[in-house]
Image (spheres, rainbow, N blue to C red):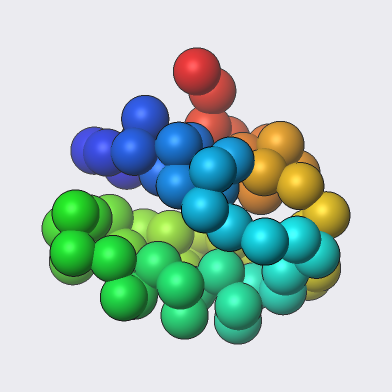
Length: 65
């Protein structure tokens, strides 16, 4: 993911939890500061499930700071 720092910031500061994969993908698709490639990678990489925190999503995606 090219904009991983932006994704981490969004997950921590703007996303509400708990959130399902569908919730997260819908929120991501509306963000103008992410490329279509990053949005597609987010959607295909994130496993189905419900997430209780940004850290859970980051772990599922393999994102680190």
